[in-house]
Image 1 (cartoon, one colour):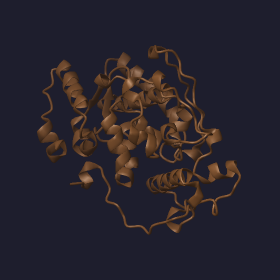
Image 2 (cartoon, rainbow, N blue to C red):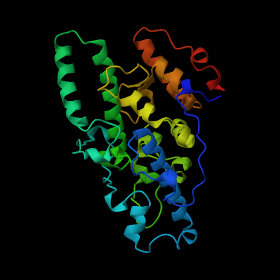
Image 3 (spheres, rainbow, N blue to C red):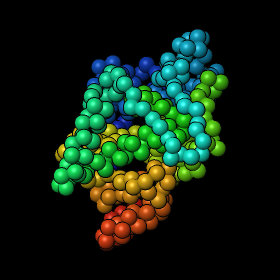
Length: 305
């Protein structure tokens, strides 16, 4: 049963729209980031269906290809992909992009400046031997951000594209002008599933090295509270955040380096169904800290199935 505690929103009834300019899908005047992303997801998926069945839309869409791509919710000329490096992913290098605040409604406009300043404070506190609890929690979220950046680059995307509110995963783009990626160059646990290839979704959902978790998140659609999910994982700037997050202890493309906190499992457990490897990995890392293993049946309840 889906409920608020699982981090899943109830679906609101909306009138079925057959065009991209339906009233409920008009982004004009919508400032709430949660609503904007929900509307943008609908537009992205409708655009995908239109590309798959061009005959049904030829009378409504302009003939110019550039205009069509812009109307589809993204400009494929702006989709940046990176050439894949060698299989030695330890040599991965990525730059923090200069962000356009109008393109990012979730994070603060000075997001990357905050990252640099926070790391300086964290290093200073560590050097003094007195790391504060709030700094440790924020550091874990900073690690998730860096893990996401690394995995996105490994998959062939740029950090800037992954961070855009209106971005669509390159895995779910089809057509002669779609970005290309080299499957063999992507670590096995990050390679796209059939769901990732067929259902339009935001590239943020591609960064987890757990196939079933990615599929669970994508299939949830509008039921996923995307704002709350991202906030729990990455909002290092918000000291009021709960400890419902993920921990990354090594190379982010290796699932054995990921851990879930008990609070994350309680809140977002629905999306961990069918992911036994993350449960095993979590208790492995807890054992190294001499902590008791999580009792998954007690934490997840009915979510374990």
